[in-house]
Image (cartoon, rainbow over all chains, first blue to last red):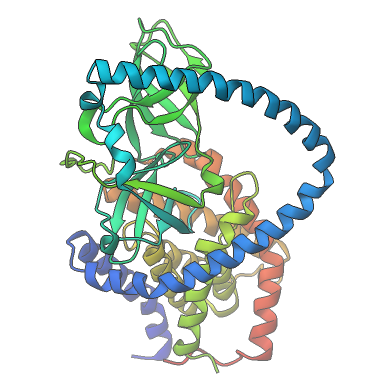
Length: 282
Length: 167
């Protein structure tokens, strides 16, 4: 076989090898090799991520200095308002604790037991493709992390553990197009399914036409389906799309989590999700 | 001398940079695809065979760092390298627009193959929205960035990498 014919065969051979890799991974035969390689690349990813974060912080500081004066005045005014808000919220918190004890609220709210079982993981990498929304964390099975565990920040729901290795784990973000989360609006209890969009926004689908959905309403996880705990904040409705001839209405939801600047997340380790038997990831 | 032992670590580092650095330089939510730029440049300079080899190595490294099933980026980048390599012998080879057009189309091809593999693996794929909001802007961004990348690769090729790749 001459050299030119061999050259022409190379792409075909490589495609066959890639397809074999695809099949091996789908059948789980590649897991240990993959885990080993990802484990080996984790320190490099971590070092690069830290360098980028430091550089980002430096350039951010320079930018911040420019409008520091104006922001300072705004923040002082905001601070005064927030102090008043804190006093008001502390009163509400006290009232809530009292009512919870009286109604045995804790038993019906597993989310209250979650707090002590969270593990903090740092984001060390993102998905290299524009088409997917994943993050990689620097903790894994060794830290008690398991497949399907919900991931949150103090601002709300982030996603779910989709892959886990000894010292790393990967999170499928709720803004990924293949993610779906059952949700509930706070004020009217309208239920629907939150799905990620290719541009990173969220849409709440399958809201019954009769349900009242309004702009500004906050959206929480409903707990339906058993994939996520109840009452984790997801976002706020910014637009409602309703057509009389359709069975359902939908709403665009602005996530409360800033997915572009995620640096640390919390993993809920004591929640046992119901195993997904379908092909879907979430 | 370009050996496989040199190309593998270089492309693995590029994949790491793509996963850690590039998401921070996103323009309107879209960031450049460094592996697509490098693999298509190499295809343009060396033809479909070497383009496909670079695509295979860079794709395998990306698949390990990505949440996508193994094979998604590998198959997509093999296609990119081989397709870009076909432009090498074209009559328009010297035309300034050829690399721009090649990378624009190769970038679209990369994303479509990637999404196709995701679909085969059972993921939900929103074809039209993905095409309009991500694939097209990403192809434009990659096409805009190809002249400096191709210039650098050409310089490296002339200066250090003149010989064919050795196995």
